View 1: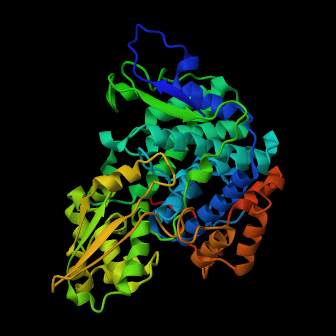
View 2: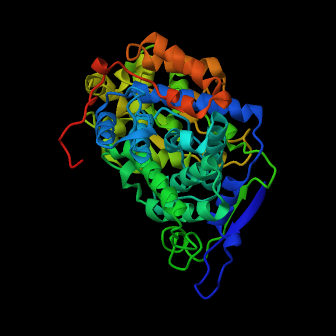
Amino acid sequence: MKLYEVKTYPSKVELPREEQLAWKIAEVASRKAPVDNACHEMVINRIIDNAAVAIGAINREPVANARSQALAHPRPGGAAVFGLPYDMTFAAEWAAWANGTAVRELDMHDTFLAADYSHPGDNIPPILAVAQQCGQNQGLSGADLVRGILVGYEVQINLVKSICLHEFKKDHIAHLAPAQAAGIGALLGLDTETIYQAVQHAVHVSFTTRQSRKGEISSWKANAPAHAGKIAVEAVDRAMRGEKSPSPIYEGEDSVLAWMLAGAERVYYIPFPDAGEPLRAILESYPKEHSAEYQSQALIDLAFKMRNRIASLDDIAEIVVHTSHHTHTVIGTGSNDPQKLDPKASRETLDHSIMYIFAVALQDGVWHHVASYAPERASRPDTVNLWRKIRTVEDADWTDRYHASDPNEKAFGGRVEIIFKDGEKLVDEMAVANAHSLGARPWQRPDYIRKFETLTEGVILQEEGQRFLDTVQRLSDLEASDLLQLNVQVELERLSCAKRDNRGIF
């Protein structure tokens, strides 16, 4: 790995493009880096995981509406949309929109946390959509798809390690869109110059505020990464036609570092693999066992562990969660969001409330992607009573561990003190979730398959699920004509918004 210095330059200084961050990203994408077996196998796991959560959310309103928008953009020889038959294909950018929304809706796919947040599995929908649409004409294969996905992960994860967006109240899709554009460029085998222009376009139009994850959180939380994917497809298409983009997009006097991030005084250092090195960042991402914000994963597992040592939850006077700055201020009481304590809050808000999540996990001992968020579940008086006894406190040690560069030290959990009415305390802690690579039960292929089978049960036919699993597990052997088979089909009578409608403009 090499570290690249990135900072703002005045316009009078002509920064060579070879020294610009967008060019470094494009170089990573245009190289033919070797692919090692562990990374190849993890790509398969991540495609299975994405399909699982997409089908699990297939009839939720934001997903159905995104699919209805895609239905208005059919294209022969286009891309597949989750749930719909393979012989129905759509413009790649709209398939990326529909599939990206489906993947993100349950907030249950992979995660990487460092200086900023990310769900790098969000790279897969637009890269796969372009592979399906361009596969036959450009002779693409499953191996090309693997390379594109690995590039997307590499770019996003290394940006997330180095540049904090939330410090300046910017949403994390600002690191996602350039990664998606780079992954599409790698898939198509584009030259460095073309990818460079596409990356700059994607960066320029994807900087948005974090209001999408603040207060009463709306369905845009699921749409935002899909919107980034749509932007990325359009950015690459435009660059392939020879169009240029704002430059230098990161370092310019009036560009994103200067005005949307830390300004002229800050210097960032971004790691990227050197020529000839494999792209291994995907191995640093981690799965979600539970449908909730990642920083709650270890705390859900800890609630399951602690509940067996509590005689009666009615005896609890207070619960204090000592955790990192991120957890405290994003999903804890440090956010100062009253909505996180509101039984009538949206599902999107509840899955960003560790107070709600810990209360339900402590009461139920299980977590379910539907039942745990049901309105009747959230409004139970005993739940509301327990929920409002929970508060979070920032702990410097947990903040340090959150930002640790050593994977063995990095932690996303916390220490929980349950204080009883008689003054007694129950104290325990957990650093990483059970499913994490350093957790009690690190996930392997059978775990991803079990998650797929659980989330798709009763939604798809068993033989359809097996067909998909058989196809994806021979990924590198797939030819262009096979790439549409990486979709999962739902019987139309079980699918809402399965036909084009006239509710909107399209």
